[in-house]
Image (cartoon, rainbow, N blue to C red; front, side, top):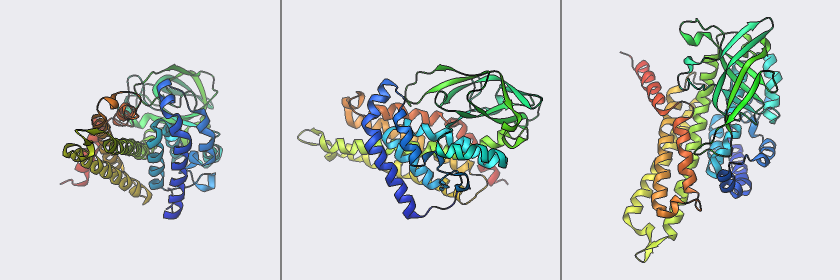
Length: 387
């Protein structure tokens, strides 16, 4: 669990990230997004700032920051260009899996190299026929001596090409009932025989960061790469990590929504119709008021989920689900309203609001669709207030 971060230290870190975004991210965002270019030159400064080890414990070379600071960092990165947050997004899911479910030997072997950015992590969960229904995965891992043989494929994997290690869910017992008890998690590193990257997917938004297929064809992985070295724990390990992933996605949504709001406020004060700035028209003022209120509510929900994680609350799937659900829907609404305020200019690539609008759906779909979030929220509420 991350330790509390003082407000002074948090402020310094967030300001450092904000300056990095202003100096190095914003100048390249539009062109790299349009041309779908991976921002290799941003990786080294992110390593130097320690962003690959945000929540990794200090004893393993990380910063050991709390999840409130974690959320603020992802918010700042996403204000500049949401895709940049993808460089470290699922990286931190892998680090959480290892830090909380791994053996001490695995922690010593992986976490220091992850904290430095030597290892760049990803998550191999979604499959062509299994997304939010994690128990429906078909990838298998069969024990063969001191190794496991993996067969199957994963889809929509962020960092597939540029990542070097992945938390991969596979079934070690296909007959287990319920199915989640037969799912295990492996750390699969590159290069590994039988492990390859498939096609590069051309996406609507979230461009510049690759999303690809991962293919496992008789891929051999040492039994010492089974997280915790106990079979059947993978579902629990990854679901716990995805709670932090949903804080990450909610924070990204807040960042994109804030960027869209800022753009709308600036434009409304510059653009004139009928002899006055459109910001003086009541219709625009009402839109801006609603947008700002929704963004702030989304931010507070996100920080609340992060605070409960920092407090050591065992399960935060309710709070993280609410934050992810609300923040992502708000992001889409605010991005559309910013486009409407810009009028025709919002529909062309000369202004960044069209990018915000294209990026927003990722947060609705990613890390468990919002329809799944509603089911999780309802289920937890019924448990919490059971008669």
